[in-house]
Length: 188
Image (tube, rainbow, N blue to C red; front, side, top):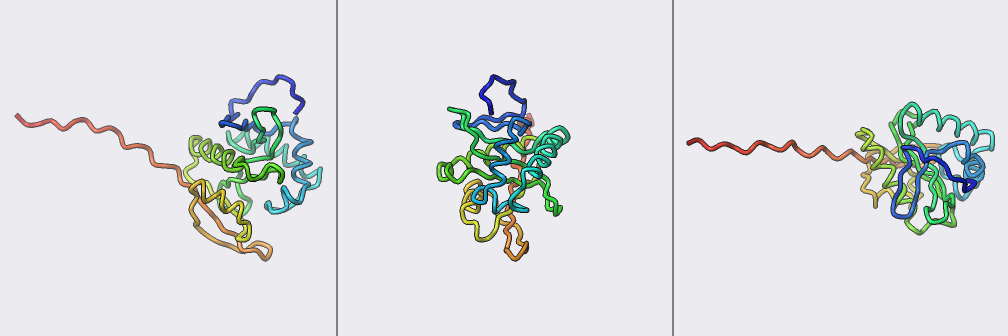
């Protein structure tokens, strides 16, 4: 981003260290770089993206936000506004449901940013009315599986994809607290 003052979206989410902003045109260069980097994006569904595909996805992500009220955020370190990666809630193309996804630059991993961003995205999604949010990780992707487990997602299914065993995890919206009961009246 260019560092210029900008109006924040009502869908911007802040955590103790991060600012999650819905992706917009100003994120294109960062997204092209992230989605074209093997270490950052190689394990994502459909793998690396060409610059043209990254631009198409950005247009789709912007439209998705307008229709659904949730989508993909650019994750920024609040202290210096540095772009760290993405986190999002997207409809899976295989019909399994709305899925949490995240991809951060390798050099910022190991600092808890993925957990912090993913936790905020899950909370946003459940508050927006999503009763079930899934996440999919390759069985061999121990780092993503650790993040999902730490967030409380539970294993729910498996499937094969391009020769890899994929694990499906789910997060269910906590039930609403029971309505307060009127105190029982005693018979006199």
